[in-house]
Amino acid sequence: MPDHSLRRRQIVTVLLLFAGYASLYFCRADLSVAMPLLIEELKSRGMSQDEAILRMGTIASLGVLGYALGKLFLGGLGDFWGGRINFLIGLAGATVFTLLFATTGLIPVFTVAWVGNRLTQSLSWAGLIKVSSKWFNYSTYGTVIGILSVSYLVGDAVARPLMGALIHQGFGWRTLFYFAAAVAAVCLIISFLFLRESRVELGFEEARTNPLNLFAQSESRPSSVGALLRPLFLSRGFQLICLLSFGCTIIRETFNVWTPEYLRDYLGYTAGDAAGLSAIFPGVGVISVLMMGWLSDRLGVNGRALLMFVGLSATVAALLGLMTIPSGAGNALLPLIAIGAIAFCLLGPYSYLGGAFALDFGGKQGSAFASGMIDGIGYLGSAIALRGAARISVSFGWQGVFVALAAVSALAAAGAGYLYMLSSRAAVVQQPAQ
Image (cartoon, rainbow, N blue to C red; front, side, top):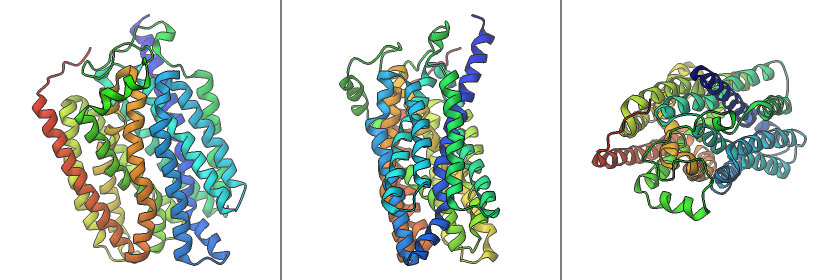
């Protein structure tokens, strides 16, 4: 078939994956945006402010733990039954469990619904990576995955001000969850009808994978789970990327969940304004991911490690700067600038981990499992961190939270520097496929 026909189908595939994954972040941002309202409701039932914060921090942490376990043990199923199925399961689960969350005010049901939401969503990114491996040549991984990585930032950035507007109109937190579920349901239907697993299904030739990947070049199923595990676990570079994911996800998820509460509690914004302004983190991240994705295709694999080192080092400085800002709405501009700087320095390099690096190591056979492992280990750390951030904020204030995150970022920067050294020693020159 003509090249323009393939390009058209690739664009459709990107749009479907982009929209579907963006919709999932409506079903994540809802908890963050509604956090001040939920805390106020818990306080109206007799809880103290600190107890309500810790209770919601626990729910958020358990959700991330479910997400991490799903990434580790379920994401790799896409290597056996296909990425499309993974992707659709994530959309369906987000719709159903978000509706369940909105139907009750009971903490135990809240917890089950939020864990179920995150657990089923955990399959989607690995499914997206698997489908991408069968539609695009490896020479475009950085750009394509950069575009798709923007999906969760766009979804987050769009969802927050829309939900903030609903709050300003007087709607309660339940409306936010119904709205998020409706967005996910629409994308589920469209993806079910039009998304295809591979370009081979439509008569195009197979996509070309990175010749340095740890698996076979074909689209055939792996022979066994062990055949997926051994090459990845024995790779020092892959082990280091998993550790980098652990540190980077801690920082990212802390800002994703707690920014609205920080803006309201520390700077004095209303719940609606805090919801809208919290979009600065994913919004600036969009620019970072696109720039870093494009640049990584020009610099190669070594360049990704270098960009991670520079970005994480700059994140340390921005976090320490955020720590020094005193409370009060009169100083509101400086923390917003600092949050934007952290997003720019962190989120672009972060997008490499479960995206381009997973494709580089996993190819078409093992990309879902590689992505699931990288992201799963990252979210295990985040599950601990979210409740930890709540405890630190209660005991030491928000400055204490930022100091802890700066320490994590410094360790991750050191790891990125070591990864760059490893890749430089290999001194492998890749010729991009045309």
